[in-house]
Image 1: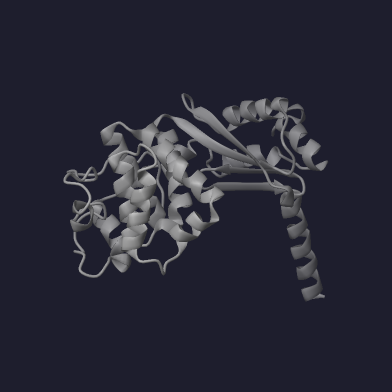
Image 2: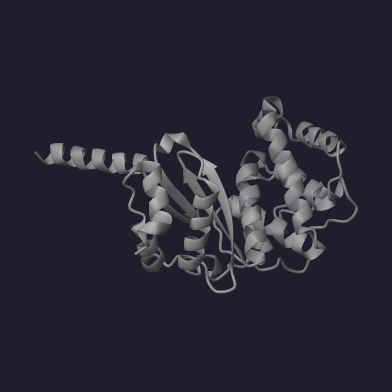
Length: 277
């Protein structure tokens, strides 16, 4: 188990009685070591097309990559998403948003603009979070595709954006997927980290962790979760709704050691006890 002088002490400071020894047990029993190195799935253009057939605009060909075809030709003479075969992503992901993230990562990798695209996605996400009208414009399914693309083109004129990022947003707009942008951006960033041997761990606490507590979290997580040669990227968030304790998100693994989770567990136990009485 984890020693009390390390990460367990931090959790106790957060809620007074959280038992973070479970983190160590979860690491060994749930296969967290090497979680980011599970066998990667090949994202073929055929799978990507099938994932978007339901959202294809009228008259748009149903074959080929979702990032190829007539729609992009209207904006650029050369499609940066075109290629013989997508690269194999370093992390296995599932769902439609993951296919978009993987395709974007593949295109950015081949063009050697991983960080540039990540920064450009961050700019749009920041604008979306700060401007309610812009956020509603992106998410509203009733806004015509042509109007969304025109709005995106005006936004791109305000700064320097790569053709890969521009085309990516145009495809997202035409396939009515702009509402999934935050999820796609998070998954893209995870792929960027993984391709560098970095593992993103998100730690959520009810109150801000001190510098000493963050350092101790990094030390223990590096010892218990990472494989040799991997680097830890710690993302610390604050959510007062959890009341106390800590929550760890490592890839698709979610380890909830908050007071809120413990209260829910007690409520469920009481509900079951009353139901069987």
